[in-house]
Image 1 (cartoon, rainbow, N blue to C red):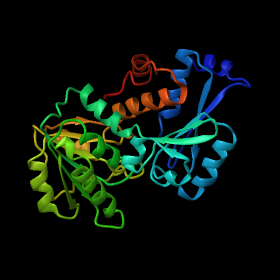
Image 2 (image 1 turned 90 degrees about the vertical axis):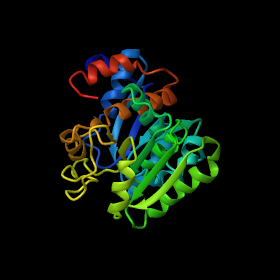
Image 3 (image 1 turned 180 degrees about the vertical axis):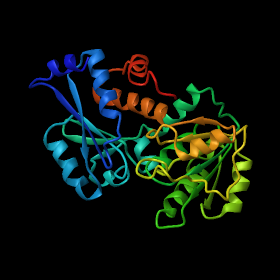
Length: 300
């Protein structure tokens, strides 16, 4: 199937890219290119090793080359806003963008992460209505998850973040949910991750524990948001991770050992990718076929 796609690349092929670091683990190029092959549209998706220091030049380069658009992943999702011409509400509310569309020379930022995360929960039969969620993280992945969860029927969300220079981002997320999203009736709380007593209490009251950080992703695959002193996992808890490589992070291994239901980041990656695919091409990604071919042996 790859050969079919290669034969279709010509002088009219539209470029889509991914700007992130580290990038070697990403499944996005395979997923998008497989979609292009299955639908026969003339696009090619490439990955570029780009961090914050190179980001401005890379964004300008994609624009200058007339790329159809590009995805943005860690650590660039928040920084990229500085270099865009316009923001969709999904990016404006979350103050982060993972999808940028080049519309006639104007770069428009979107965010499909939160929708992808919630869609993945729904696909796993998770009921969100009236539930309480504990979310760890304040960055480019955790922020859209928090904002989208607040629109998805939950009653309360407790956000934990390290008490460092990025803690203010978590505070802003909580303030936004409590003040700007009052109509959704969600109570948002903020705690430093170092407050272990609060973490125990909030997880004990929650139906879902979500890791929205890069802890557990290579090369941080030996790390977890839960250390050996935190006995918070239980059988009726749902534990989710945005990380998909490795598929079973240390956190998910800990949760499985405790008998909890676990959901890794593969499904979120698939659904946020499908939404980005539509923004780039105007076509629907053949999600069922992509999932069957690309993730046939993977556990969602």
